[in-house]
Image 1 (cartoon, rainbow, N blue to C red):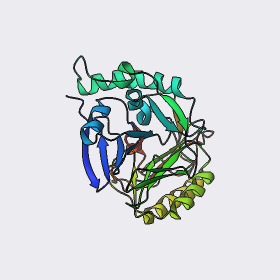
Image 2 (cartoon, rainbow, N blue to C red):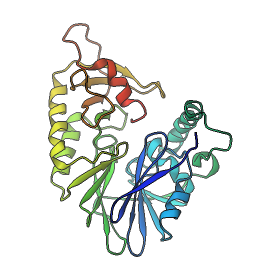
Image 3 (cartoon, rainbow, N blue to C red):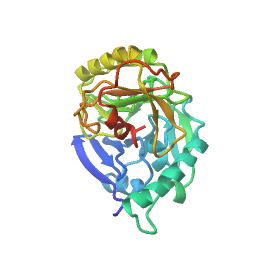
Image 4 (tube, rainbow, N blue to C red):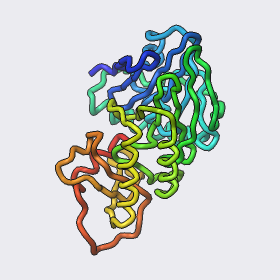
Length: 292
């Protein structure tokens, strides 16, 4: 398989880009400059695809520090990231090196396949904070802090298009098991903040499907439901050091790869041997795998 970057224009100013690993990032093009929000895994030449779409200068903005959002940043000289999420580069490089070999095997990638972390170098960083605005000429991108998945997670509102580029602030299988994830209660506060944003659409880091603000109520329901659910132990297949407590709210039969699926993985809890059985637990690993 060829490691192509696919792109599609989803709004007059917004392109959605996807890599073969199932990751998404977004290019916002104004009249004077462009912004690239996230950079995916780094498999495939992201910079070449960006330059095919626009010849304008590009500002790279990262929603958080995880390898499947920063991998392609190694093709760019400078990137913006929150101060809280800066400083994890070595950890993510280690994870990306392991994921790289798994992708080679899974997709039978030929020798010479472009991986930016192997062919580029770590970018210089500058720090993005709540309220930062980038004028692109005819369009503005505004940063909003969305702690949850990581404490320093940022979202970016494309103001003219009324779109929130949310990274992993909400995902069908929501992951809050990292050392630097917030509590579930703190994430619920972020959901309330997202509900107050003046947007019509929420675009995430791993789905073509566009969520709407009304969908946030389902994640609130998930957070409340998980409080009384004993959950089950969960371990990531690709990076087995990642462990957590999995809560699956969706009924059996709901495709874990679908936008309608709802599950949450929080930090591990002490094992409890008694209690009710999980709904949809057999399929939940697939929903979280590769989308952490």
